[in-house]
Length: 255
View 1: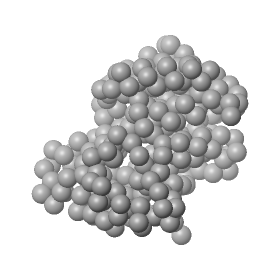
View 2: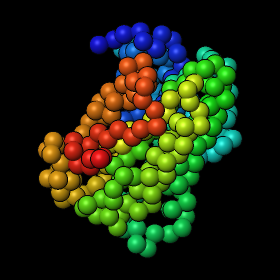
View 3: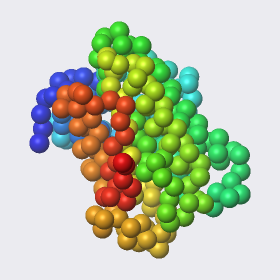
View 4: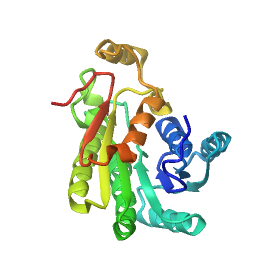
C-alpha cells in the first residue's frame, strides 16, 4: 500500500537493477522516496526497474557506477546531488558471490569479492555520512547475508570469501551506528536463500538441501527483504540502530 512517509527524500539503492535491489527500489518509491537506482553493468535491467518505479507512481533516475571504485562512487553521488539533492536514505545492496569451490580460490577472486561487498559498502556510507550528520538526518541499511553470521551448513567450502565479506559488513555497520548516532541510524539485513539472479547458478541439490533446513520450508523472495529494509529505514524503527535482522525463514537465527 502506497504512503508518503519518505515524502520526496532521496534514496540511493546500490545494485538496484534486479532482484533484492529492484524490490527495495519499488518499496521505497511506494513510500514516496525519489529513488536513485545504481547498477554497474545492467543498464537494461536498471531501466526496467525505473519503469516499474514510475508505473507504481514513483520517480527516480538510473546511475551507473562500480561502487568498488572510490572515484566512481564519488562521481555518482555528485550526479545525484546535482539532479535531485543529497542522499538521505541509503541501501548498500550491491554484491557478488562465487559458488565455486573456494579451497583453491585465487587471490584475485578474494580481492574482487572484498572490493565489491566490503569496500563498496564503505565507499557509499563514507560519501553519505558527512552530509547526513550536517542535516541531522540519515538512514542506512547495509545488506549482509546469513553467511556473514554463520558458515553455510551445506557447502561451507564454497562461500569462504563471500561469508567473510558479509561478516565484515555487519561489523562495519555496528561501528558506524555507534560513531554516527544519533543523527544517522545504521542497520543490517541478512537474507538467507532468496530467489534472485545471484542464486540462479546454485545447483538444484544445494537449493533443496537449504530448503530442507529452513523451518519456513521455502526459498525467500526479494519482497521479503524489501519489506524489512523499508521498516528499518522508517520512523517505526526510530529506536533501532546497530542491529542485524535476519530474513531467512529460520535457516539462521540470532541469540
